[in-house]
Length: 168
Image (cartoon, rainbow, N blue to C red; front, side):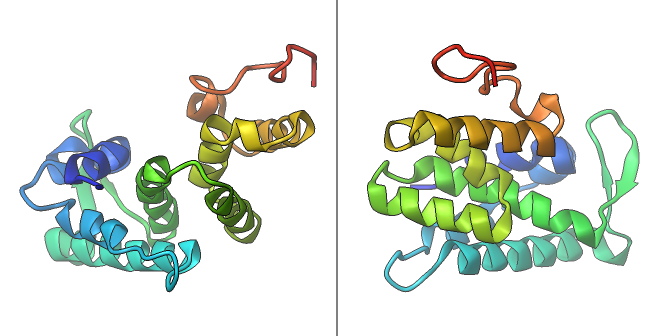
C-alpha cells in the first residue's frame, strides 16, 4: 500500500516542506498510485495520471503564479517543464513498492527505454540486480552517471566500479 507520507518525502526537496506538508497534499497522488492495476494500466499511463494530478494539486494550491516557498525560505516558480521530473519522483515511490518479479522487471526495462525514467533506472539497479547480467548493470550505471549529477545517485550507485569491482 502506498501511503501519502512516501509521496511527501519524494517531493519535499523539489517542492518544499511547507507545501508538501499541507494537509491532504499528497493524498490524491497516493490514491492514483494505489489505483494501478497491471492488467489494464501501463507505467506510462500511470505516469501521465500522476503528472496531471500533480499539476492540478499545484494549481489549486498555488494558483497561476505557481510560486512555492522552499526549505531555505526562498520562493521560486514551478515551471511546467519540471512537472515530468516531479511526477517521476512520485513514480519512484510506486516502483519501490513493486514486487521483484520478472514481469515487473521487463515492464520497468520497457518503461526506461520509452521514457528515460530516472526512478525506474534506480529501481532496476537497486532492486532487480539478480535479474540483470553484470554487463546490463554496468551499462545502466554508466547511463545513470552520465545523465544525472552525482548527488542524485552517489548514495546507492558505486562511483567508479561495477558490482564485481572492475573499472567501467
